[in-house]
Length: 109
Image 1 (tube, rainbow, N blue to C red):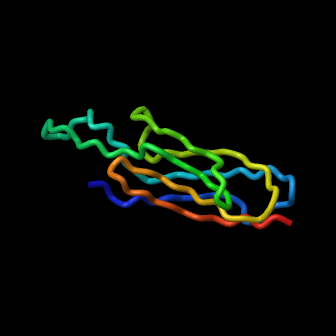
Image 2 (cartoon, rainbow, N blue to C red; image 1 turned 135 degrees about the vertical axis):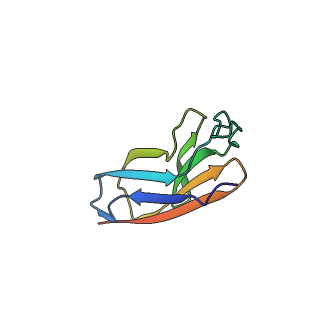
C-alpha cells in the first residue's frame, strides 16, 4: 500500500482578464511499475498514479492518462487564459482506486 500523495500546486491567486496563467503541479509519489527489484531481489509491488485531471468550476480542462514510463513525483505544467474567477480542482487517480484532490482559487479582475 502506498503512502498518501502529497501534492503541490503553484499558481497565482489573482490575474487580470485575458492574462495567461501558468500552473505547476507535482505529486510526491513513488510511481512503482512493478518491474523493479528490492535489495532482497523481491519485486517491488506496482503502485502507480494512472490518471491526472484538472477541472475549472466543474468543466474538465485536462484529462491525462499516465503510463508506467512516468518517473516518481510526476510534475505537470500548463497555461490557461484567465477568463473569470473560479476554482481549479486537481485530481490524481491511483490504480488502487484512491483519488487525491487539491483545490486552488483564481480571482480575476
